[in-house]
Amino acid sequence: MENINWSELSFGYMKTDYNVRCYYRDGKWGELEVSSSELINLHMASTCLHYGQESFEGLKVFKGKDGKARVFRMDENAKRMQSSCRGIMMPELPVEKFEEAVRKVVKLNERFIPPYESGASLYVRPLLIGLGAQVGVRPATEYLFIVFVTPVGPYFKDGFKPTPVVILRGYDRAAPLGTGTYKVGGNYAASLAAGEKAHELGYSAVLYLDAKEKKYVDECGPANFFGIKDNKYITPQSTSILPSITNKSLMQLAEDMGMTVERRQIPEDELATFEEAAECGTAAVVTPIERIDDIDENKSYVFSKDGKPGPVCEKLYHQLRAIQYGDVPDQYGWVTILS
Image (cartoon, rainbow, N blue to C red; front, side, top):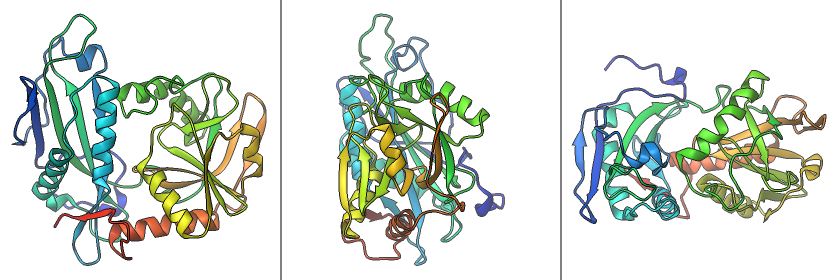
């Protein structure tokens, strides 16, 4: 393996040694298979290509100072993928098979796990797709589950620093009772145009308002949203938001810090009352928001005037990272030691 500059890694794809696959045929899941190929053999009429039968997940593996590799809350990812499968009519992969595949693929690619304190991690990408050939709109009869890994740096290039976010009222990420709560590719395809426009305007991400009334905060393109005020951790309640495992974890940590957690509708105007705001997710971890600009309404909500994260975001970020790396006791059993 060529020498990897771990501290300079972007959040992108790098070829690793192996991936792990499992086929669903004749109404049942098969055994795990190991492959060194980066390619998938697809029928041109596969339902993943025509009707969006596709779900994916994202996990991270961290190497602690003790040299052990740890994965964070993979059972939650397995259960969320099952929820996505129910939402788009794919067979549910058993949690045990999901976890076995993750353990196997990490073990096979151990040499790609970035060292402790490098700022990088091993990203694990499970993917489930419909393979069966269909021309009519109906579920496939054959599916492929595949897990690959790649070492990654921070999702946002500046790492743990406040970034500007924009509200673009001309775009929706998902319908109120659509697929927003599922981790399926179509939601991300729907966010590409808005995300590209945001980047052209100099913002790191889009903050979507609810698609029905354009009154309430939904989520950022790649992550959930939360705000801090009056010792409260406040995050949106909506039927079109992906249930973030990171957000769920941060809510518990906020309670541990003596904060009140509120999951409810957040009117856009309430943004003006927040002391801090941030995006959170597996890829983003905790990314503080510098300001949110509603360019259509000519409004701006500022959370960081000195370019530094707020004290609550900082504390939550470091506590979460400490658990993920094994630097503090894991009282909730969130971390699984893989090697």
